[in-house]
Image (cartoon, rainbow, N blue to C red; front, side):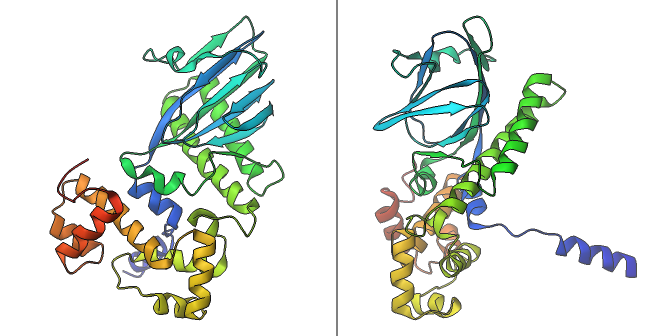
Length: 312
């Protein structure tokens, strides 16, 4: 009995609580974006359209250019990792070249690696996370369309280690390799976001970077850990040791909206996911903190743009 109790205690203490970023990815039904590779030599340029997803592009050998709308061309070298959200982009040996459609090159089932030219002057990989419903903007709007992982950031070593493992899975083609590669791609996205948060300035706006703020980050964690609680601004301010006015000002400046607006948006993200899963409106309303079904329906329509019963 003593051993059983001790084992149970160890098991419970080993549980790692979810952070808000993990909670959001879970609530949005984050899933692996198909992993792809490119091996190229000579003159080449391929373009990809914008998708509501987080995608990384990693250079594992050689060099090339990344071209984005309204952004100077970025020179990429071996070891560089970029995270892209809902934006078009082109990768090329020369940014002046006219690109061909990259989507069509990967259109065939099982066509995960494309080879251009004769050789492997440049080798890159891509992958990431997509979302199951229309709430992807909750994440994408909190991140820039393009971010580069700083090699000097605290996450740089972890990114490099994960990238090396990912490349090994693709190269060796071992049993279960595609599944492992998908999971590593997800980890790489998270590491890239960590690097972004760690190197962001204090005037960056968005709930993801606000997690690094000791007090605002704590308020966000409180709201995410118990979204149904009848939170008020004075309650949250007291929890983080600030006056109501100072807390409201700081939260709005760091997150980009007032505390209660953020809480409502998070509740509606949870509600939309639960409704899509077939839960009853009354049940969902109660789960996300509404005693009144009509009040929930009003908040849902104002935030999401449709009634809870209308479907996507």
